[in-house]
Length: 450
Image 1 (tube, helix red, strand yellow):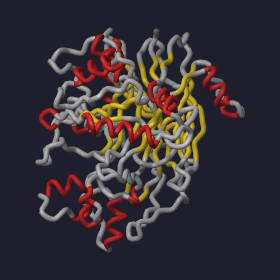
Image 2: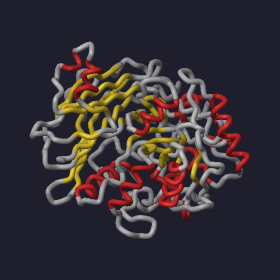
Image 3: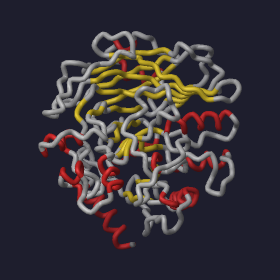
Image 4: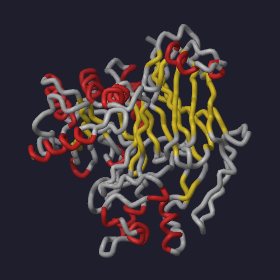
């Protein structure tokens, strides 16, 4: 184990080229109690004072023990953080309201968790864990790439939605904070591939599967010979994988790591759109007309991943900037998802369509669908290249803890399984989606009254 870890660290250092190509030493802590996914990626800023051994789930499956190990490593001079991923396969454990011993979350627990893992992976090859229709029944876009399994080889289905999806965790976090126990789920957002075939092919038209056995498109769509039907269905329901977006000053370890730490990040379902989000009580709505708007946004507001306080009764105004992938699909809409805690300690959520393409005034009006399923093609004759606007919360209550994050949704495009069907010359399957509306999510901006 020591020799392999040493080689991993040396390989990362060998290929790190500041300003050109950035690598980090890292490993995955693969905790999987009773096939419930509690995996974390543990990422080091650099190889200085790095430990001789990575921390394995054979050492412990308890997140608290991983965090304690990380804090010990820090006292020895290393710099590191952890990123939990795909809570949708945790059956409620990822964002449980109790610690590993079954005790209610305490302020000390919240602080330790947030000291060690500032980010969460919202989308990867095993689906998306932003929201679920059972938890957010009024969200028409919640039913997106839901890979609804535990990590059992038997294709077992989870039974707990709460504790498995980020939006509910963000709501629980501000409620727990409101009760004086800190916020254990104050996560920034990224996405990643999680593929195990050295390819990280996250594009729908370039998908190669999670495992080497899926390199054959027939195996992906029709099933791997000898696999049970339930397991083949699991493979068909895989997503193509996500991506992490980081707003850093330069392409170096230090700049990117610091941006990860301050949560100035966004995640996508695999598209290379760009998403930016600022908030302030002092923004002029005309700020985006200024050629120096970005400098002013940092000077008079905060970027995504940050906190707003001391409103003095004024509602917050947000700057929203979303740009489509250069050679990808146009954008359908931008939404702000708001969550808050009322005077009785109850949590609420509301979705605002803050920008719509094609001169639509109502979010309930569909952008349309140009996908040709027979050819696996689409057209950018609908949708927008970018959205650049401001939005002020019309229902702001200065006494309520709240969070806001962006969701940017593309127009419909063919799903990877549709591309494979066309490649194979077979009908598109009807038991999985044939199209997809790729999307991106900003890290939240949190508001607290004090």
